Image 1 (cartoon, rainbow, N blue to C red):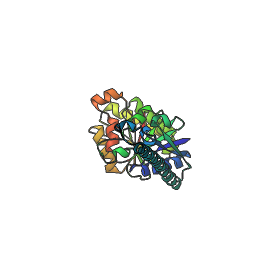
Image 2 (image 1 turned 30 degrees about the vertical axis):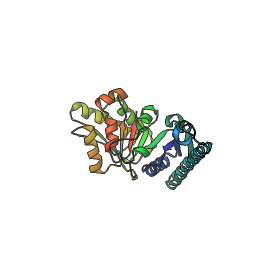
Image 3 (image 1 turned 180 degrees about the vertical axis):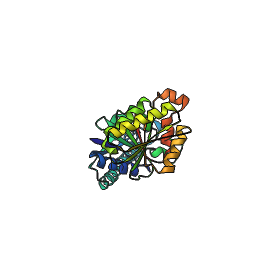
Image 4 (image 1 turned 120 degrees about the vertical axis):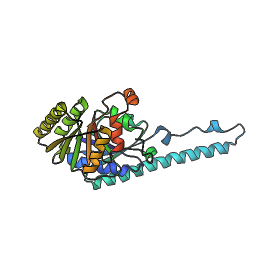
Length: 276
């Protein structure tokens, strides 16, 4: 098995590495820390068009030298980020490797991995608490494997809350839990928002599915809207991870009616495992 941890210079990078190291130790998987430089970060820029006629050649040469120095600094910074990431992963007990790439994140990630670990926000959104990182939804929608979204701080996971609505992605999330060694020995609670015979029957089936896989699973239901009720439950009862199906609707429909997935990731202060 292989885990890929997406790291940058954000406040979430350390937590991403701790979380990936925890997962790697439980799964017996190697962890690759990947840092991708944007297309504009590491490449040279042609600034000659900004120079008016009559500018000295020396000025153009100086701008070219500055641009080359900037590109070198960006590369050095990227390597430093990966060195720090490897140190954190190694301390967490993971077998760690690193990779520095230049280009589009989704293109450079590849597909040779079983789990993606990423921060809730990147460098550009570190202080924009109402917004998620610009790449997060792109990654989740494109990924064919689960995506584990790190919170600001990492706490070893002992109790897991599973959001269950009976939909296809929620059923896939249950299958993921049942088949993954990541959840062995953890206390699992499956929760649905709402009440009634259909919800009770669905929860009973979910509990039976997990118990058949040898997992200790409890069930419960809560009232309210999922975006707020589940977040309150996580915080009030000290769950350290939320597992849920991800993006059951298209991006266009989510823009119109909103996305429960996005709201849950935004509001929860613990890691969220997303399964499409």
